[in-house]
Amino acid sequence: MNELLLSYYQIVITASGLGGPSPADGFIMPYSENEISEIYNSFPTTTTTSYMQCRGFIRWKEVLQQIGLMIEPIYVLDKNAIGATQDISATSLSFTLVFDRKEYLTTADELNHGSTLTDVAAIKRSIARAITSTLQHRMVVIDISNPKNVQSTVDVIANPLTTTIQLAEANIAVSVVANT
Image 1: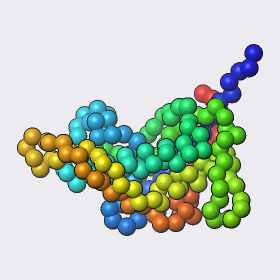
Image 2 (image 1 turned 120 degrees about the vertical axis):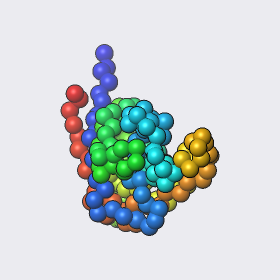
Image 3 (image 1 turned 180 degrees about the horizontal axis):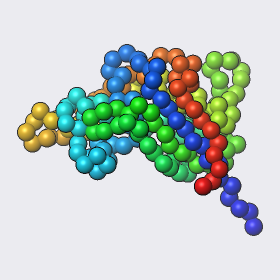
């Protein structure tokens, strides 16, 4: 009988050294505002921090989308937004991706025409593309200035955390880990 072989990758992205054009706040937040309220027992306390967390969540969705262009992970485990609160961006983000067909982890290397990146390097490049992109999504943002904390659906722009693939990759660590 064929046994399904899974490949596990631990990813750590650090905010140190990143700082793209404003609004580049929010780093990467793997939780929606509703999840934030459950985890931290509170929604963001200002409209500004509500937008910040939305920008972080937009980037998280883009990270998963860029990786999914190669192959969708079958699991996203152990998400940890280190240093984050409902009002503070994470200083780093760690998570584990699980794939069932790692041979599909390939992507073109735009820095070396005609070259292909595979495995760990392909994951790192996909994440770098996500955080060097300008993104715009319609998001539900809580208007804290309204006494009823009205939720509004608005266009939110998340500017790149940095403008170069090289700087982005310097802040991304990807390693193969054992199935635990």
